[in-house]
Image (tube, rainbow, N blue to C red):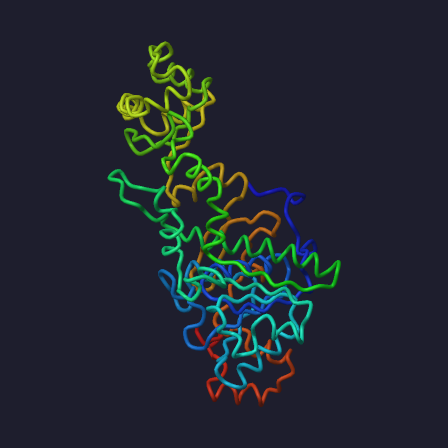
Length: 408
């Protein structure tokens, strides 16, 4: 089942149509911000280093110059590969910066100043620019010049401390949660600044970091940890993951009505009068006993059997699924949360439908993720370069030649 036409977003509805964006960022956080601008209609020029390009192109299993991450964060953009260390390459970047509505970069603090691509320099020729600068630890402080990745920040900001295995060993979430959260917060700030740009004609410097975004993302957990002296208690009991006869279930029966229903469903009616489990706080205080008695019961049936029984009792629960399970899930299909799209490098891949944006479709320019330098000639021609000048830059290695037709 596909969504009704009335609920989808057409290309004519895109709010940032006509806006220009220069994306100098690499990796995930900055490029993900740029992708949302592109998917909302902006013309996002992704200026990448020659050679290997944005390092998202080497993040995980690569096919040619694409990976799952590069396909996700570069959708809807145009790519030009240029050497900023060359005079001609820097000139390209400066021309793009002087004429853009938004500029995104994630270089180390102060590095772009020597190129004239820092906010102060760009704002002199482009005073209305919305300038997004993403760093690891922030613009100031004792760690401001240290490199940071998602895994570094998961450790530094306490995320790993609240995600431990059965032996108490801190674990990282096995996806780039902080990178993507940072990209979303940066996009939110940029979108707000674009409204200000449109209504008041003013630019804005937006400085954020993986550190700051991670703290916002975890704000409630951090506050809770402070209020509880670092000994955060569970939000209620019984809540958690339980092994079943063929997998795992997530069950949340912390509220009194849910707990009483669960007692009946799992055949533990005696718990209804057990003084250890009468109130939510009683169940939290005696959670080890409660969970120890509950786990053997849940292990007697399959995940689907428990899902049916517990759902019929209107208790919060879900079968623990893999990402591959989701591809066949009836609910995911019903709301078109994932759409199958043909990528010219990776083949048929699932893409998520982003709220407020057109659904991903094969052949749609907003779904296409560019190859490194795919739009070299197109972008340079728009900037006023002649064919002879473009060819000369190619020969000198100033612009990359890994356009789609060359990579085939």
